[in-house]
Length: 152
Length: 152
DNA sequence: ATTGAAACACTCAGCTT
DNA sequence: AAGCTGAGTGTTTCAAT
Image (cartoon, rainbow over all chains, first blue to last red):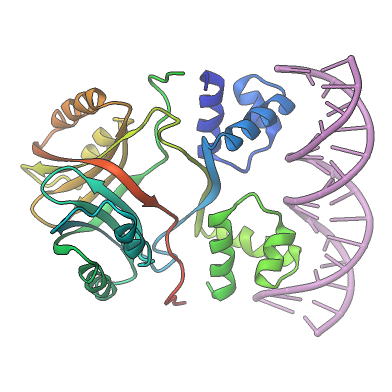
């Protein structure tokens, strides 16, 4: 992971459809070398996948909320994980430090559907309470920053 | 936006590198027709961009936190937006309903660097308080669910 | 890391349903 | 309007340097 790899990642974050010729130009490498580096980044799992960023509103997922879950016991185990993963509207699930135990990110089409999802969340073993944060407007959502310090 | 478009989006979310031949096979269309539909999805902004999913740990961004900001005044305006956007470690910023005013997602390499970012956040005009949630472990982060109901 | 060549995929125009 | 087909172009991919 040197500065060229980071530059390649930054380029791909912005546009993963560009050719290896333009990728190479952007980082000062031939197309073949750029290709080889990207191949290795994929192989090593630094690049997890190439994906498409879908507009939530266009996909009828205009309601975004974050829900903090209180738990009666330790919930950092596979059964909890799987129970949450079974709820498709949950996009992220994290174990957190602080007064709650878990934080989940939920996207639904309406607040009615959010309510239905919350009902399912409440039914997950160990969940004793929820605190819901509804997003009114998203300022921005962007790729992870790769600049600044980088080791290895 | 019919069921074929949704199937195409679901396919691309999982793997945006696949050929239009395989995309077409997955949804029962020729490569040319699949291509034409994807082109229109991009044109209409349903597909915002094709990007690469980078492993945060590999990119020295292993510390994930969510910070809720209390505000002394309305912060839903461009100056606030821009001030937050100027902090590269902030990956998302949302206006929220509830006791706080804003929610931001921050990725840093260390908790020390998180502290430095929080100092910058506190310096943003109108911010009167912060509540930080540090993620201990991420269960999962996955693409937005596109199934279920879909209109238009 | 580069080069060059072969294989492959994308792209577009014209045609059909 | 939407899908199919086929030819031409550009890109990926790989072996040799």
